[in-house]
Image (cartoon, rainbow, N blue to C red; front, side):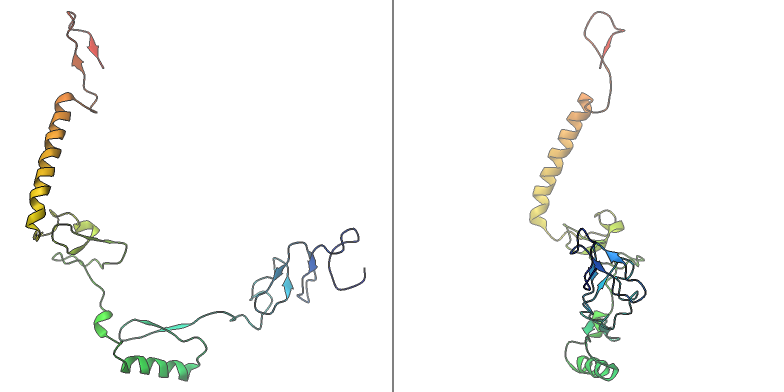
Length: 189
């Protein structure tokens, strides 16, 4: 077969040979490296497996400020450049040491760090709490909204009234009631 392409005699344009010098496997689903633009088989497609000279192509690097824990992009800078970027950040007004301290649950003796996924803002007092102390009964709730408390108490009264009516009917409890027929041993479900 002439040429550097892949394929077989029947299908000369199908597939390509792996360009790893030790492999040369004819691969019908080859991978093109986005770093060096060469073609490889499944086994040699990663940067590490074919020692790609452009393995950091398209990658980004960041450094974390020790003072405020903010990530600063340092792509394309050497160690001296990174050091000067961090110093410039510290001199700017953006570096605030108070940002480093993570918020914790305000309940006494609770040390739970509040993240975006584990905090709830109380509807009554407007303060953020951890999931363990999310209910007003679990934290000392100082209701700040008096206007809403009237509507909430009315809603609560309606809820309790409906709940008591369901309890009287035996709704959802699987209770049995005696039928009004003359035979007291027959029960309806």
